[in-house]
Length: 496
Image 1 (tube, rainbow, N blue to C red):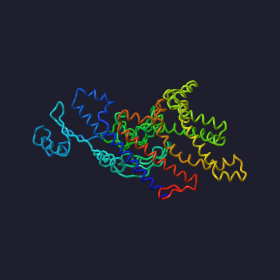
Image 2 (tube, one colour):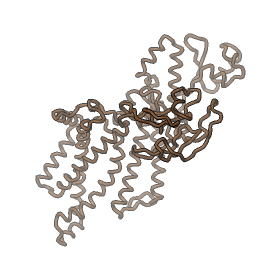
Image 3 (cartoon, one colour):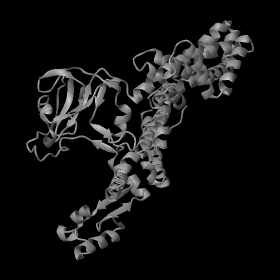
Image 4 (cartoon, rainbow, N blue to C red):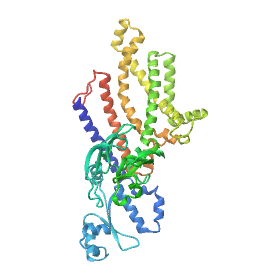
């Protein structure tokens, strides 16, 4: 089984990377790059009267996102000329030599609109797009990451120490992060900054923020709480000291020096409300539990009372839930909820009020019950015609004993197989429900990113959703072996 699981993991990782790389090529090569500026009109309007600065802004953004390599004349001369002053003079021999060299290397030389200066640009090929992503995808923090000329005596080591709460932690000096591994009361309780996935910065929405930071950082109001700073001083602060990264010595100000005894002073803040991922997970898990609490007993009763009024009533419910469009059902339930005083928009009462969660959770749960009920009924009806059931009846076992001790045990196996996937995929949220109730979760992140042409966010979410889907299948297969020991996962990848 170990060999099987290892093989599945390797194949899963390859599949995830293939899907992600395919999306990268489609997004960067198939969509006109000017569309990324549709939601950044304010910046473009500010530079409208300065065409050269506008050109630089556009090409710098394209380079940051990963479309191309952009080099203004100053960079061209720095990289390719020993006579910088002569190279910076348009028309000079050195200038012409550098331009010809860049053209020979496949760059396009473009002259600015209001000056004689030029710049070089070269679009990345599909293979280069994929290679650039793969080579920068995984970042490992280590003691030689920080290079600060103003701090030449920076100590460089990884060691086991204590955090500001006195809890053991793996710490580092010379790394980007001060805490490589730490513990706190937030799920999953053990956190690490040692290995990071780099998808790039979000643009045009959530500018200057890493895409993973956007979906994993808290939301709502800042939390101001009593804090003991590294230099021993205390006071109220919103800083999350576990997230502190190195701040260059030249950037350290008086406020930093009053709180920190090292350069690890660039910290994120604590927020009152969960992140997008956590919020979608809260809704998803609550709805999943409620759906199973409703669907499993209902499906069992339908199977036990096959052909009777209980079964017919259940089939009517299933047919209604399947035939009614999800959006219509959501608005119908929303209307009913409003009559009981429940909010029709999540932000009305906010994260802290339990009433904000009731209606969306009920809707998400009910939308899942129909398929669960019909599958439970189908599996149990199929099992009731098996030979072992006939043998149990011949032995004189009652109908309830046969259903509870034999049929249910076997019929529940395929249902169990899907549980890990449903739990894991709760993180992806529900697009329609979160949109209708204006819930700031993961559900509408991908449609919003596509609409805004936020390429890095599209790639990030594609990777996350693909990874969750693929590994949930593996988790389901592994869970089957615990539920039914007769099922074995062979080294050849077969389920027996």
